[in-house]
Length: 205
Length: 217
Image (cartoon, rainbow over all chains, first blue to last red; front, side, top):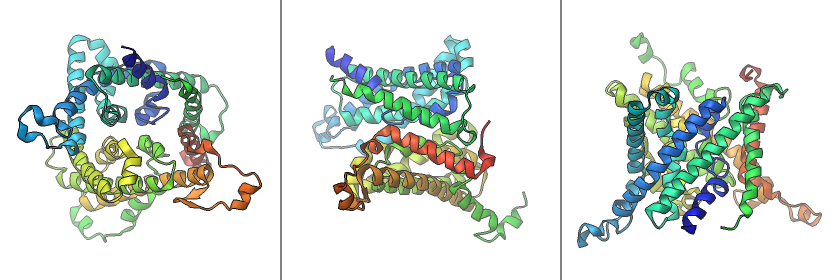
């Protein structure tokens, strides 16, 4: 239990998707103009990461890893399919996003119309594929650990995008040098937020 | 569309040359189109991984643009994203296997970021905006041009961060020992992730003050 909590906290603060690995920057920069839309996109990312990471974990554990097919037959024990992981992970992600889109459309039309264009965009958000690839690289021990990593890194991304959106709403009233306006100042603020998040590096978990 | 006229067009006409050179400056994928930032920042602490990454992305953009442009009339619009992802993912698998075979240490340093070329927004962006509506040859040029524009920013970042962060370029010491004897220290801060963002911010600042038409309001 403590292990799960550690992974959860680590993935939110210490290994933050945006500030430590720069994942999901494209939508982070494009959608962070207002707080409302960024809350919606952030929640969708938490949800999708919470589903795809454990699913990809099972896929990796029982099909792709070296020797993972041993449950099928003794003869498959030395088969290593890990070179297929990119294409299978992205297929799982794209179909999961499609599924989530259909479920949301059926049960909550109001949420669907407010998320609208952002939902399909999540399929090509690097934070999602990055989550699965990091899960594979760090070799988590169980589905529970993979799930807590997925939800944790989703929440980290959520925090980052809501934070920058709030700052960008305020900075509109400031006198930024003209060539820096818009994109430039957003990069620099993200850098400063990243420096602030680095203070979490000292936490021993 | 006067197709006859286009076929007689020379391979490197002025229009085609623009496809190659525009992304280097006024239409740069990173600083102007805001595409493909994710991987640009994480791999640039040293110049060598930055160079390998830039080369891989350039190869994948050129070939995926070419393949999608060949198939553009046969792809049903409803499933085009999944078709594009399959083409990109297969190319990235090839690149990943080649890197693992020939430059294993760099491939370890790049870790998940080779796989993340798949979701690099430059690829989807250029496929959607260019390769779906243009002929194969201009599409290849557009792919190479955007790969180069991405590469240039990566190499500038890698150069600045490695020079000031570790005092080396491509692993060779360039800052003389005498400097260190006088008390010069490497700025370890340059190696850390947030500095990459701040340097990109500064590059954007310089670029936009030289090209005022790019300034946002």
